[in-house]
Length: 262
Image (cartoon, rainbow, N blue to C red; front, side, top):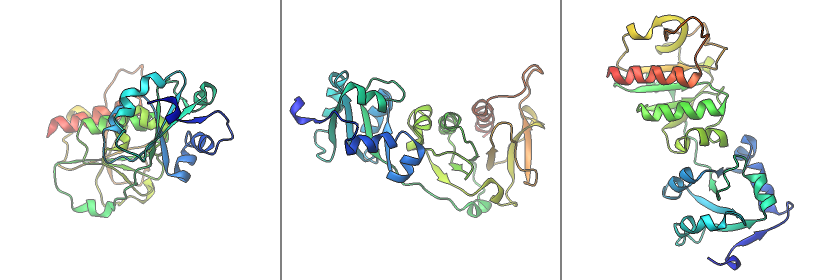
């Protein structure tokens, strides 16, 4: 592809550039229904997924040589535009300093789930309920949940967005394709549903008998879970010198324990 086939952007007042700058924040993503995708591995996977609508490829003068293979994958898609930015403008968008082309995609539709329907679920499946505000933690938990075959990952209203750029990167792109649903507030979950929570004073996980259908609830570190909830608490035994585990580590251990028990 020759330079004449690129749309050149040299000014920060350019309409497209101003839009892309907004997409580096969760608010901008929510308002404009588009995402920026970073990282060679994630971008290559996204470019091969026919369910993801790629809108544009953003290059700089420094990395246009890395884009040949990527651009060839879109050569039959006339709807994908290619933009060549000055190095200075590109650095403002490359928030992870990947120095690799950036994709602009349409934000996938969020899916809702009626938690009341889960009351009658009796199948051997893992349902994970998350109230995590840290996008790095959320992305890592989504990655682990996918590895341990979670039937549904339900983001409660207290959780950050799965489309946050840090979450997408931390989940290695799985937050775009995993079985993720939007749920209610943690305080509005059905009180008749038997949840399993992680608690330092719960039953040791190595002695816990997992139910056939697991409703695992994970709240923000330090804040704990609502006391009024109907739940069984489990703990992960560890040495006294360590106060607690990272949310992703604790959730991963619990999910593996359930996965291995089936």
